[in-house]
Length: 413
Length: 225
Ligand SMILES: Nc1ncnc2c1ncn2[C@@H]1O[C@H](COP(=O)(O)OP(=O)(O)OP(=O)(O)O)[C@@H](O)[C@H]1O
Ligand SMILES: [Mg+2]
Image 1 (cartoon, protein in one colour):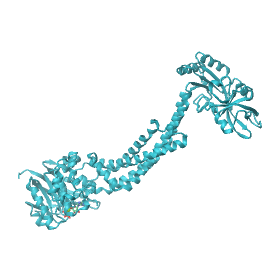
Image 2 (tube, protein in one colour):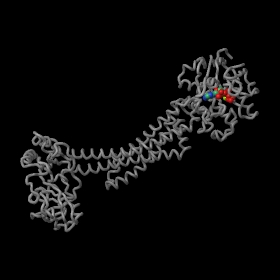
Image 3 (cartoon, protein in one colour):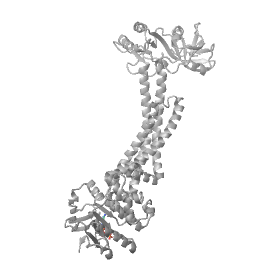
Image 4 (spheres, chains in turn orange, blue):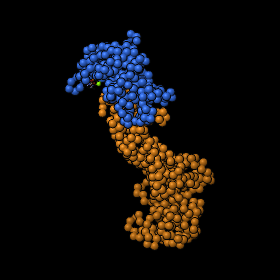
């Protein structure tokens, strides 16, 4: 008898006696555990990979116009754009920029005002859309390395990100048509041609500047075609000392937002928090859906336990009549449902390890973070949940068993 | 023998309430059983013998009247106390043995001991009991459904004795045994009585009742002699 506990031993024997039935009930738990665990693992891996990429640009403060006066989310770099409709300030103006520069130049900080939009492009017939950045070209070397080619010298020269270059098969010297072929309304930009002088090094996902699939041009070229001179979409401050960031943000907030919220001041840290939070919410939501399968499993465990109690009424009568207490009968049935849980959760743990690995690889493309504790912790958590649910499903059947009257139970056949 | 009753029934009545009507299984029973006595209960089928034994065995509480075991009124005991009384004080040999199907024979005998001591036996007493009741050593790892009725009866006796109860209750202990085995079993029970245990035995066979010192006859839930 294992651990000398006769009730555990009795439960084990009963599970073995009804092996197939017990296994089938446990499969429900297996599925439930796999569902919540692999979703959890995937969410954790997503968060981990986003965190790793974003934290590389940890010393950047982003200042964007506060369009809503509330919590606007998303990446400012990609979508900010000039296509705003209402009459409020949707840009950072000259005065604001001057204030920013005043504050930022107190330390060893680099201020990068930039324009950004999303526009149609056409590379020798292949049409698409790309993010366009307008940045003082002299600042570019401080932001991202040119991998191939050189900085633009002529006015029509641009740099392109590596992803974009790959997608459109762009080389140094390639030409890109930017804008709309037919100008129909005010928002349309007459088409113009630029030439690629350099391809930028891959930068990875970042919150301040996403150059990988963008075209980077000098601000004069940008405003020449898109207009809006001194109406910046975003100002980045690259702090010389990462410890200055909080102070800088406070000073900026005081200088720019003292009357009303004119600009949104973010750094990658707060950005990261928001993204992790969003990912976390998403993961919990998906896990909740996975939890429904656990609920179904709970019903099947409950069913099997009720069957077990009904089948063993006579045995319960025997146990009670020779001096087994109610609590001991309860314990025996709780052990049985726990055993089903342990079997289900055990198989589920192995399956979700494999399933989580496949899912992570499929959805994120890397299993670099799979073996980190933040990711694997979902396996014991899933197992624990599965076992607890099984035990809870056994509570009522166990209670029913313990309430049987010994004489009545003995008379059962 | 002393004159202190170890089992005392005072106006005990047991009524089974059925949807259609009430069955009076025991009707105002008064009975004293002294320590060390050997009492046989006889009577026709349905006269209330098993019901009476179940009251004494604390499997049930009388509908009215009082039952004292060792001077304690079972009405004053809660479910756990009643259960512990069954476990420690009373050895019950059931008419149909009531062995635990999931346990082998030696585990069946050890079970009440395990309940009491909360740990596995180290004394070897269950094994000695199985030897005493004459069960073949080679069979003790078998399950109850793998042995004969006579062997089950022996295991049931061994189990009833394992916690050294002062009261031994037997419901038709020879009910489905041949006469030779019956005699062996009865000799065993008489021996246990001589050791000082109080024995109450239900039987419908007069020659089995002869082993007892006192015979009670029941009819329609009443003691008639
Ligand atoms: N649980 C019960 N519910 C309803 N009636 C019952 C119950 N148990 C016993 N009875 C009734 O009580 C009466 C006495 O039953 P009991 O089993 O005590 O008889 P008995 O003398 O042991 O009979 P036998 O010799 O056949 O074993 C019978 O009429 C029986 O039908
Ligand atoms: Mg009977």
